[in-house]
Amino acid sequence: MLISKSTAVEFHYTLSNEGTQLESSLNEKAMGYLHGHGGVFPALETALEGKTIGDTIEVTLTPEESYGERREEGHIQRIPIKHLQSNEKKLKVGSVVLVESNEGRQQVTVVKVGKFNADCDLNHPFAGKSLTFAIEIMSVRAATEEEVSHGHIHAEGGCGH
Image 1 (cartoon, rainbow, N blue to C red):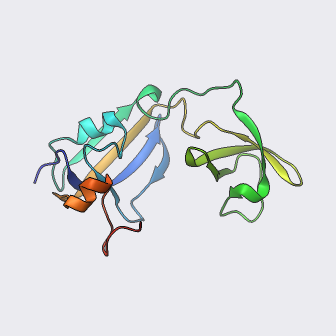
Image 2: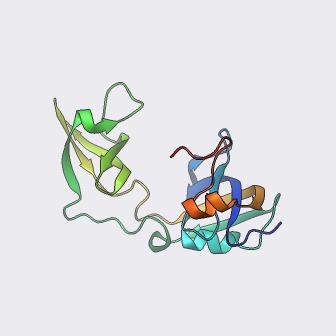
């Protein structure tokens, strides 16, 4: 089966910027998304269109095609530490943490740590970077009606909401 609108796709990826690896799914579960429903960057979706299980691709996205350019003005915000989610025991400058906002969960970078608050850069950590995705397609199947109506694929056992 070829990747097309409303197919459920799983792939492994390695993400890099100018030859430096930023992250990889190779030691984790493959990433899954519903093709044609905005689950991945549009330029990445275009590159995956028509591919099938076992295919590998490499595609580079500009900042405009991924997380956008870095914005300096007004993108540092003081946030109470209790609202920051991190796997680290102690926050430090440069830590990438999660915060719940009006727009959902987002990654922010800590630029200053105080006793009760941290100043955070609200730009995505990959903003302003050209990103190269090396991808291997692991599975492609027709999405269920429920997945299409929800706009995302479901794990085994169904949807969590």
